[in-house]
Length: 99
Image (cartoon, rainbow, N blue to C red; front, side, top):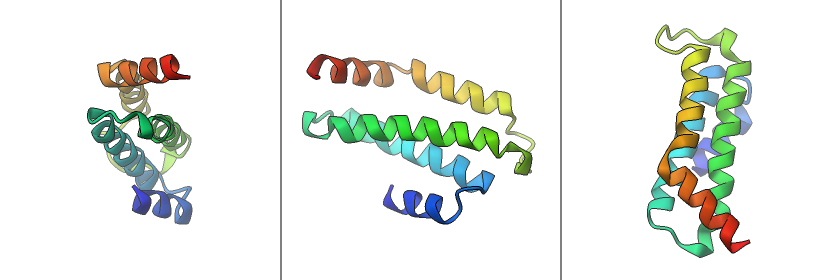
């Protein structure tokens, strides 16, 4: 995760890097959420939200995309499907309940 954030700072406007880092951040947050530790709740939520923000930024850089398997619609669907995952919903509910 720290490497992904570092790369994002170095290359904030490179579609492939932004897209892949968004995926890394999201999957890393899911791993942490699988072992829900209330001491890490802020970090998990922050990382989930950051991952979605990074993927949304990838959409703004989409003109650089060279992968025919990735379309804007695919990215939008990925973002929406991530928000529909039970782990996302349960983590967000847990956070709201402990605020």
